[in-house]
Length: 459
Image (tube, rainbow, N blue to C red; front, side, top):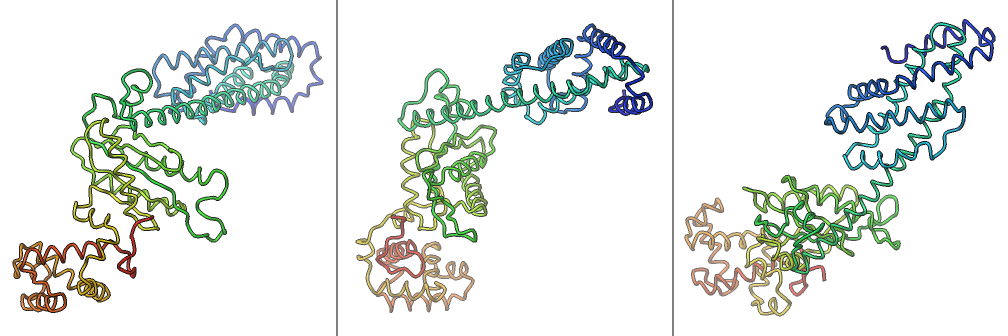
């Protein structure tokens, strides 16, 4: 059967033989005959429509027998309803297509795309129309009878497909709302330290790799939306309206959920003004890759004018430690500057963490001579600071430190002497070396150009 060729032949023949050549009674008789034949051949016609759907729609071809049987039953019901409307010569009503609602819900639940679902309607209509043309025969009365069915058939198809699409979208919106509510309830349960033990929350937890028997390592990510300067359009990235950037938060939440492709859905929820995600690390993977992906997510969102500050907890084992990991992630946010970024505790040493969390009193305890040297050295590419770090990393071995710095040992010796003269600290004494390393850590926690007493965090 050639798609559409029957319509062209019918149109040509109808032009050659005007409707006036056939009496109204002859057309009525032919129309009744065509509809009666279709009704008698309905089951075979429905099966043929399903086969065409499977041939033309890949998403349908890949489905199992139960799915195809359900589709065939729905096609048959549509054909039967369509024929009832045509035989009664009346307008289609919502009651005629009421059965499509549950079928639309089943297609949405099965993951059939809306475009494929509506395409199936088109195929079913095309198969039915080609069968009408085939049964019209070569007589002018048959052609006129078929043409009289064209407009009612189009009205039925438009009405039924619109009704089905609306039912499909309603179910999708309901399912999405239920999924969001389910995820939010699950997160609140986990943050309260009460792992779900039964029911839908337990099923949701297992779907996210967070069941009570799960032992895979996990982290908690907390992200907050930051205001950005007005762009070319004159609008802030975070709207000032009552939603306060709700769309941006949901977009960021979805992007974070997609960041970790370990075969398990990542629990990611918009919680008040923050986004909380609980990614589970798969076998043989560590937090470094996750941190890289989170950094990439943040950079990609910046292109959409969505700026984030993201805090990442240490790795914990089991859902019972999620509350602690959540507190860690929120604490990590305080380590970030005003422009945001990713503060990942797995990438921070205990020494760096203590330096980043230090208050003004700790900075005031640093010898002014040391502070002055570090501030001056920062403005001069930090060669002395690098020398102190290399000397410590080389276990106080001057030659090894020089090799790390790719300089001559005499140059390294000169730098150590200069540091001693400026600060009064001898780097070969452990106490003096630790004193300098602490001062460097405190100095590094400040943004470039900031005075020594300025707190680095976001407030």
